[in-house]
Image (cartoon, rainbow, N blue to C red; front, top):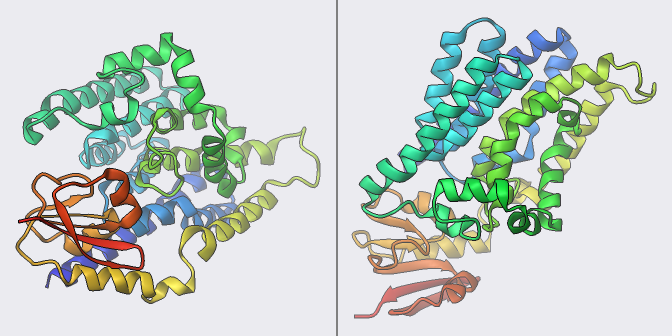
Length: 370
């Protein structure tokens, strides 16, 4: 039954994320009025390698932010502010840091739609919500201070106000962190599948800046990879800006005749397919069945007793998530009785108090010493 429930959740997430193509088409219809272009953007949404990367990891509440925020933008343009508010609140209910995307939506309202008062109010409210989540709600329920700020932005400060102040008054601290080849490649991987169209609509694209700032300022590589859930705070705004950029390029008198907006969308679709290929995005045919690596992981998971706390690789968490205590390694090591992760990752953490039970295909299974 647990396996069936997990599969149902994964299928439900996929269906909800895929439904974003419908709201994408609705938004594009109001902005473009071109059936072919609308269909092109719906397909471009479904092909997007960042969207694929978010969906294939596990069931993650941030995945729902993408269709919800696009739906909110569609509702704003359709003159349905109440529905827009419902979509934004639903997105914010997912987890604490979705407030960052809420700030982005406020920026979109202010700059892309010139609704300055509402946009500024939404952005301020989301900053306040983020502060409350990090300093009141999360510490209360976790029984400890909010951990991610210190781990990812310690070089800027230890509280949200300190980090924000450093960004403004101490640029020499963050510039070497932001301007690196790895982060330039990250931006390229986000923009190329959209034909760089967001750059032609800077007012709309500015809504992606809060999410991008969080990712680019981080020292954690997980945040600045184009396939991770944290891109859910960036991708919806880039998609909205791509539609605006298409309209700008289509109507521009300065562009060369060979550079048509439709050709850019076709090219973006080709780039998306390439980035979603087996060698880059792990969505090739070989992933439709278990390989030696996956079989090894399943065999080692089968050796872990059912009733003990575990700390495991994040990709294995969905397989063990019905346990009362299942942590993403290295979290929960003080309580875990068994550990299962890549040998290299375990070696970097220098795990003490455990003994190796088995090794297979780069995986290591550890048990707490008695």
